[in-house]
Image 1 (cartoon, rainbow, N blue to C red):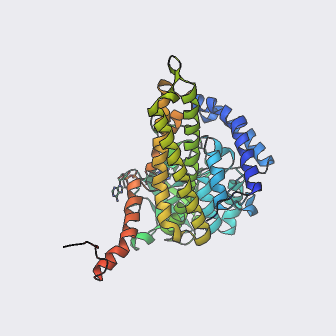
Image 2 (cartoon, helix red, strand yellow; image 1 turned 135 degrees about the horizontal axis):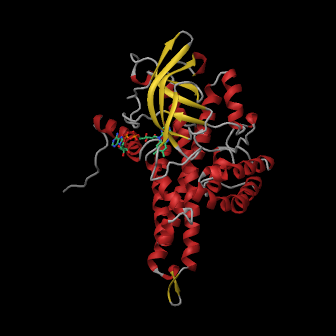
Length: 411
Ligand SMILES: Cc1cc2nc3c(=O)[nH]c(=O)nc-3n(C[C@H](O)[C@H](O)[C@H](O)COP(=O)(O)OP(=O)(O)OC[C@H]3O[C@@H](n4cnc5c(N)ncnc54)[C@H](O)[C@@H]3O)c2cc1C
């Protein structure tokens, strides 16, 4: 493994960092106090600038107007952009669009690509991904109530979803629905494109998450699909492919999240260090003079470095050996980085005291919003169980074959 960064990538990252500091961080104040609508037009202007600078959609294929960066380079870029809640949106690589772009790229028909993929990569429209249901466990999505029943040339969709991130203002949803209840569990569901202006697509509310319902790309909706009729040509892949495609989408999604979380860590850590050396705490003393604060800073630095190394190693393995070979690392990265981020943000908030609880810095936003990292795209427990299952498998087999003694010295 060699993570040397070449000159071109280094220059690009420096350019992005400067842009974040000069153009993006100053926009956060209005975003945090007045929400996304207050900054939407400025955000559009910044997106235009990003395009002019040739930095648009870093992870997306060049053929659709993205930069086509390799995953290890995108990891470094994503860390820079993740320093602000606005970074990924302004550079055209925000979830859930990034994942939906991958689905359309891999499984879309030429017509679907023309209508949805091109405009999505160019940032002309937004999308959402509608799988989780209110009444059934998202951790075990084969338990799904939403149905898509064939009627003539159409599917008629009925069901109730929630946590459909960024549905507010999206042009279409990719919906997971049961198309064949009699099939084997992982062949029951399919993915279907549903334009949000279809009659029967009913956005009930933006759910208040940690007290904030948000709006636009920064919201999570509850949606009722009520006899929602779309043409059968809106099916993605083949009928019954829903879980297979979801698995393909979630693998990249998990590592993309981890890369962004490193940015959250970096910003919280940087703010924590700045505050520590400037906040007086006793005559002639600042917070940084206190050993407990020094311990927080040392522990955070070490944890962030370890999380970054694991993320880069996973990205490298994905690039060189493919997603399937990197399944264990992807599970590790998902829960390790989410927990490092939570600890670092918590320490930063604690160090900022009362100021940390306000929206006068970005820390409280990170604290509220990034707690969900341990839940979405597979809760910590689900990843730990599947990782332990894989690790233990050869040990169980060896034990069954009478091998794998305990090397206990007796006598
Ligand atoms: C901010 C946010 C954004 C989201 N965005 C989207 C989106 O865009 N589209 C979408 O479809 N969904 C989205 N989700 C939903 C998310 O994927 C689900 O919340 C997640 O899959 C967990 O499902 P659940 O909430 O139903 O919890 P449950 O499945 O009910 O699980 C509850 C808890 O039980 C524990 N648990 C689960 N399984 C096991 C197990 N096998 N063993 C031991 N413990 C277990 C875990 O601690 C878990 O947190 C989002 C969620 C959040 C919070």
